[in-house]
Length: 197
Image (cartoon, rainbow, N blue to C red; front, side):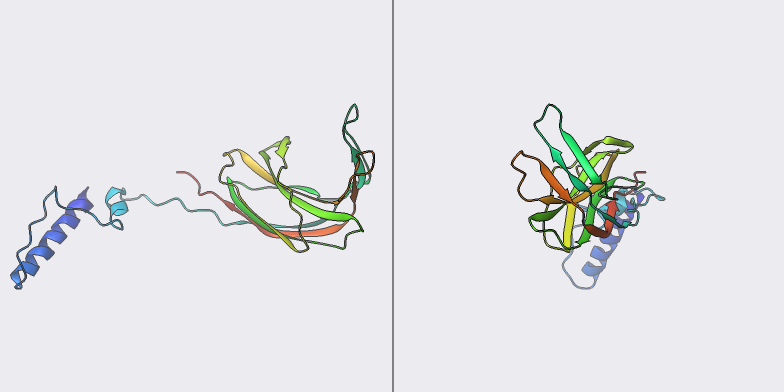
């Protein structure tokens, strides 16, 4: 409030000074006619020691792994998967202290077996609850592929994971999905929301 009055006084003195130098006599600034420029408005409303929230630095993401080898059948009395090689890091939870807002990763992967395609997805869930993760938006592209996902709708207790693998383009005649092993490397960043005051 004091800053707003100070700004009004400065505007008034500048206006009166211009009138004394031969310009037209300006209308004195009053409480009703004094307005703040959009740039000055945040200063008028700020308290003396108040600062804007600062976003933490981006969280680096860097790891490598191998996708699993096996098959999954669906529609049987119970969905079943059998893997001869479980692979490593094909489902990777990104550990971050804060609220995720955007993830950008580049994924490089090795040669595919004939009829196979590499896939990747950014999965979302609840921190500390591995069973809550949902992977709905799978992408496939030549290596290196990039995922750039806006996470602004993720709740404050949300977390992300990356899911990757190599899958047969066409299911087997019985409807089973076949997975094959491929080496991959992931690099990127996770942007976090500014900490609330």
